[in-house]
Image (cartoon, rainbow over all chains, first blue to last red; front, side, top):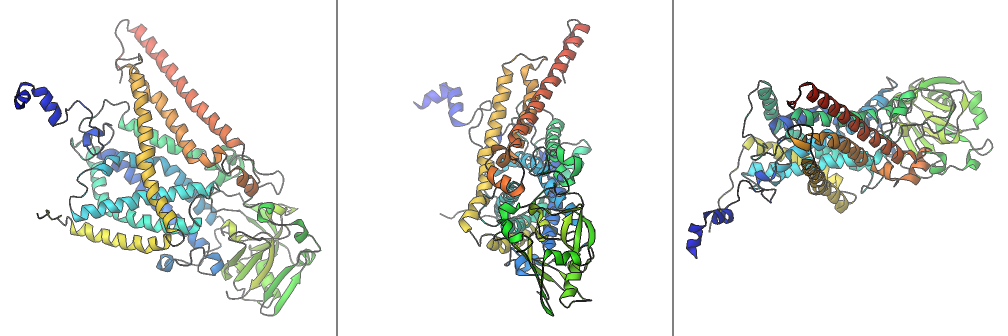
Amino acid sequence: MGRTHVTGPASAYGRAMPRPDRAPRLPTSPGFWRSPLRGPWLTSVLGLVLLAGITVLFVTGLVSYAAYNPDLSPVNDKTPGKGLLGFYLFAWPTGPHWLYRLTQGVHVTLGLTLIPVLLAKLWSVVPKLFALPPARSVSHALERISLLLLVGGALFEFTTGVLNIQLDYLFPGSFYALHFYGAWVFFAAFAVHVALRLPAALRNVRQLRSGREREAAELVSPRPAPPTVSRRGALGLVGGASLLLFATSVGQSLGGVWRRTALLAPHGGADPGSGPNGFQINKSAAYAGIRPAETGEDAWRLVVTGRTGTVRLARADLLRLPQHSAALPIACVEGWSTPDQWWRGVRLRDLAALVGYDTDPPDVLVESLQRHGPFRRAALRANQVADPRSLLALSVNGEILTADHGHPARIIVPAAPGVLNTKWVARLTFGDL
Amino acid sequence: MRRPRLPLGSPFATLLLACSFALAGYAGVRLLEGDPVGVLLWFVGAALVHDLVLLPLYTAADQALVRALDRVRGPGARGGRELTGYVRVPAALSGLLLLVWFPLISGRVEDRYRAVTGLSPDGFAARWLLISAALFGGSALLLLLRLRRLRRLRRATKQRPPAVH
C-alpha cells in the first residue's frame, strides 16, 4: 500500500500539500487572496487619506459637542457621565455666525465622502484579518485586538452617523451618547494605529514613488490573478465614488440652488414650502405636538423670569418692544443648513433687561411648548444672550413665523446648533444656571 | 508538556497599546452604560457583518462578473475580461449609493421623515434609479465609443489587431 505513493507521486503530492495551481480554500492562506491590487502602496495611500479625513471628522465632531455647551446646564448635556472626555470644552462663540454651519457641514459631508475610502481600505487589508498564526508576540496579539476596536469603531461611527441623518434611529440608545463615546473608543484605537503604522505608510509611498517596489511585501498576493484594472484605475474608482457621494449631498449644506443637486441627501432637493417661510424645517409643529390652541393670540403668553421677578408677555406686548433684525442660518447637527434668513424680533438681552439684568445679561434657560424631544428645554450662555443678533424672533423674511418655524416666537442665536434655536418658546428663565 | 512562551514583541508598541486600551476602556464603560448587549452587538457586529458578509458578497459578485465576461468575446487580445470596468464601475457606484441611503431609498423611514421634515419621502427611490440609469447608460455609451474607435483603428491598420493596454 505504501508503495503506491512512490508509484503515484502526483497523487501523493496532491494529498500531502496544496498544488500551486489549485485555489486554497481557506482565507487563512495568503494564496486565497488573489487580487493583484492589494499591496503596501494601495493600503498606504488609502490610509494616509483616512488619516487626514478622520482627523478632521474627529475634531469637527468634538467641536460640535462643544457647540451644544454641554457644561452649561444638564439640559444641554446628553452625556452627563462624560468625565474627562469633556476636558476641552469651551464657551461656544457667537461669531462668525456661520461657524456651526461650516463645522457641521464639513463633519457630515466629509464623513459621507470618506465612506468609499474606508470601504476600500478595509478591503485592501482584509487578508490580515485571517492571517495565521493569530499572534506572533504579545504586542502583535494586543495590536490585533486593537484592530477590532479600530474596525468596529470606524464602522460603528459611520453607521450611526449615516443612520441618524436619515432619521433611522435603529441604534441601541441615544445618538449623542453612542456617537460621542463611540468616537473616543474609536479614536483610542485610531491614534495607536497611526502611531504604529504611519512611518511604514510614509515609507511605502515614498519608496514606491521613487520606483523601487518590494516584490514580496505584506498584503501582496503570492499567486495574483490576472489584473482587470490597474491600481491607478482602482484608486480612480474610489475617488470617483467619493466624488459622487460628495456631489449628491453637499448641496444640503450649501442651500439655495445647490440644494437641488443633493439628489439623495435627506435635506436635498426641494424646500418644504415656498415663500418667506418655505425653508428647511427640523421638526414640524405637528411632530412636536404643538396644538394651535396653545399658540393663539389669547392663549399664548411668554413667561420671563429673572432677578426682579416674573413678567408675562403676550405676542402683542413683544411687538411693542424694540424690534431688531439679524440675518442668520439654521444649521442642524445632521449636517444640512439653510442660507441666512432675515429674522426679526426682540433681542434676548432686552428681555433680560426687563427682569433686572440691565447691563449684565446672564445665562438663560429656554423652555418650549414642545411636550417631548430631548431639546424642549435648552440653555444659552451669557455670551449668546449678550450678542445683539440673538433674538426671540417673531417673524422671518418679512412674514410672521409659521407654526413649523416656531410661531408664536422662537430663539435664533448666531453660530448655535439648530436645536438650541428653540421653537414655540413658552418660558425664559434668566440667571446663573 | 511546556507550551512555547509567546515573546513580548515590541515594548514600545505594547506600551502604546496599553495606553490605547485604557482610553478605550474609559470611553467604553460609558458607551456600554445604557444597553451593553445592544452596543456590543453593534460594535462587534458592524465589523463582523462587514468582514464576513458585505465584503465576501461584493467580492463574489465581482468574481462572477469577471468569470462571466471571460466567456464573452472581447474587442482585444484579453477577451471580454477587459470590459469588466464598464459593468463594475456603475454597479459599484449604484450599489454604494443604495448602501449609504438605504433607509431613505427603501422607504423604511417614510412616515417619520414626512412628519419631521415636512418633505416628501417619495423621490428617493426614483432618484436612485435615475442616477443608476445614468451611470449604466453612460458606461454603455463609453463602451460603444471605445468599440467604434477600436473598429476604426483595426480597419486602418488592416489585419493588425490593435495592442490593448
